[in-house]
Image 1 (cartoon, rainbow, N blue to C red):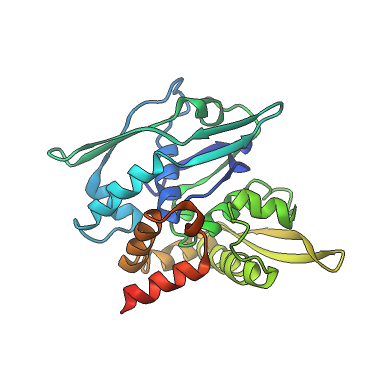
Image 2: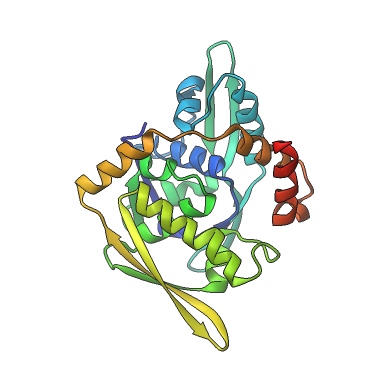
Length: 272
């Protein structure tokens, strides 16, 4: 699966949504199954063992975690700003487990057909293997947004716009310093070390504080990208603690899920 391509409409790249890293990787893996000749979405089947290994899940015990993730994914909303309307919809129409066969079938929501099927222009394409190696949910989004502008070499966002696209809640990293440390610098380190692009960024003040971010995007050579891929494969595993933490957070009321203090308390409890 790591040699497959993800091809997404730029409207979908710039959509606003909030998914965990594992949820995003499931969506991207599903998108990579779409063939350029497909005219409709299919039910895409995966071997549970292969999919689990590809997502970094360690053992058969993690499949209960995977079932929890896919169940929650059915309810996740994304908001797409179209040319003349705003679409609020879901990612997945159905998930079906065939435990005797050891397979899982997933199907995209038909609303997403214009953004994933038979794309002729205004789309972004990249290799699946780079995105699935990123551990931070924000790093995956930043990677897509910068791949979209890779040939241009730079991209500007207002801070408000970037937070909205990335699905950062109002009470999550409210101070710019925290947002920079937890989102921008983490993404910078991960992309530079693990993908086929790297970036630097400039902070642009609006009034008294940082109001805009300008990204400078650098493409890596094939050799550099392959070296980064080879190094990261050695460490590519989703930690059990992070899985349990994400699973616990999904059980909380939505108002509490984005609070860093709650996440810190749960993480401390898990460690004990």
